[in-house]
Image (cartoon, rainbow, N blue to C red):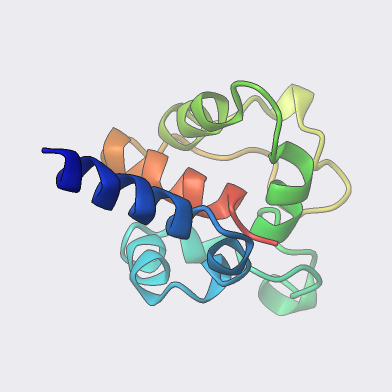
Length: 126
């Protein structure tokens, strides 16, 4: 049992190391989950990528989301709810930066567990 606890501790430390976090945006498994869930239709990883027809992007880049929310208490839960339930177009702090008015609810496209995985992945980006 002690050996199992040490292995879990070692894996936890390695997964949370700065190097692991720096490589979050290149995680192909998470990119695939984001793509198959429809997230990449409106979002990109890097900032500055144009949206359709050269307009502003539809949704914020995930690096921008990470800058806005990383380290904030409750960020994972809040963003998971936004993914599942959508956002309020009248209180968007992305207004003027994106062409989309709000995030639509996505509970039909992704499970709560997978939404939380994606949110944690996004928040780990540097």
